[in-house]
Image 1 (cartoon, one colour):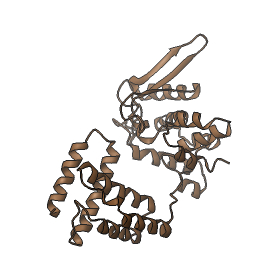
Image 2 (cartoon, rainbow, N blue to C red):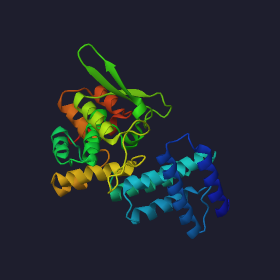
Image 3 (cartoon, helix red, strand yellow):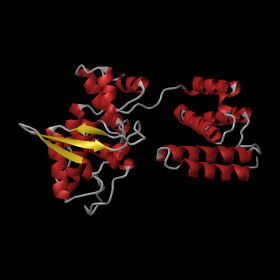
Image 4 (cartoon, helix red, strand yellow):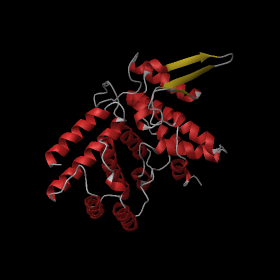
Length: 300
């Protein structure tokens, strides 16, 4: 198959799976396979269908490129998926490819950068570092809701005001928030997230001061303190790191804070409180126990 046809087939594949996979997954497929096509063009070899020996050669190339083992695994998974989506034999299942992957792991290791867990004491420090303006009110609501809900970045920025519901109980009000879609709920069954009184109060204050009535729950705020239409998932990391810096946390902690940090910290706190693994997985909407175990390994 000629190289130009490989590019066209990739584009048709991306169009075909639009809406069936998460946007981040589709972006990863496209970016990784485009890089594989470039490698194949440089070496005058076919990308679709790819020869297993050429895929092994590509893995060896990536191993020397400075890419981490997790990134190489994603690149190989993308090659595998594009082939299978086009009903082509999967070259990554070949023994020579598996041997090269083992060689890559022995060279680079399997460990990936672990996000620092923002547990309750660290959360309080971040809350204390928030400013007294509208951005600070937004940040407080974001921090508390992220900790309560254990939401992923993509889930936080997708929350909408219309999905807030308040149950009038006998002695108090219970605020809950409908999560329409998550990484482990691609078919939009949805689920309810129950908020603590502290989180509900912070959320109410943010919505009142920002005068928000509909659309996205969390918004960006520019330097002029103007509210944007939405908050990008990439901004979550920057908000956490900015507040950690303002709270004067050590640099090595700030460097390891990511959009997963609130999920990691909340899971670690649940473990310390005696929660079962089933409860932790249910609260964080995890489907794989090994993922949770990686998050909990630093709990003690």
